Length: 127
Image (cartoon, rainbow, N blue to C red; front, side, top):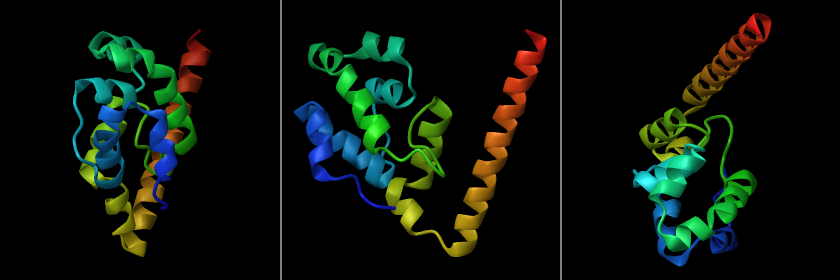
């Protein structure tokens, strides 16, 4: 898993770059605002943002969609994903996995995707 290029962090406010880098690279826990951003919770993020971060929410979205890992273990998208990324230890944790561990992660990701797809199909059928 490749590191995020340094220039990508230029999208983010200066005072947040190192926090975001540490979360992505090492799975270091992040504060309430960044947790809301990485959990894809716009309303909570806006409510917790300082003025600079509030004006930068679009840049956070571009950063997430363009540079932040989404598979096999997403680093963003929900609070569950944020907790799992921290537990994993970020990209460093991914890089440290053995082939057997990697296969187990891929299988769990596949099972999670199937579970979500089945739930969505049930919702569509009920609608």
